[in-house]
Image 1 (spheres, rainbow, N blue to C red):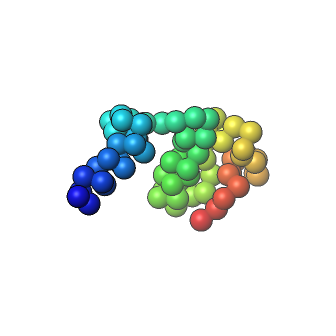
Image 2: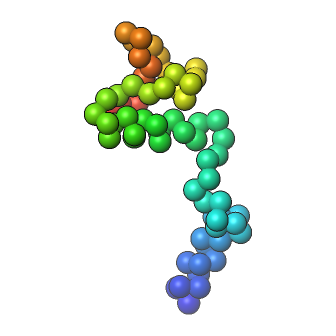
Length: 68
């Protein structure tokens, strides 16, 4: 019963399309992915094209609001 309820809940959350669960979504979908890749590379700046109006420029580099 628990397994069936979990599977049903998962399908409802995924809107009956579980294969799209990890697809990129709306306008902010890549912010944190790129920031995580930057942290992994031991720097905090992200590409300006990713940050758009949500980023701020310091010393020629673009940063997001939330740091590590």
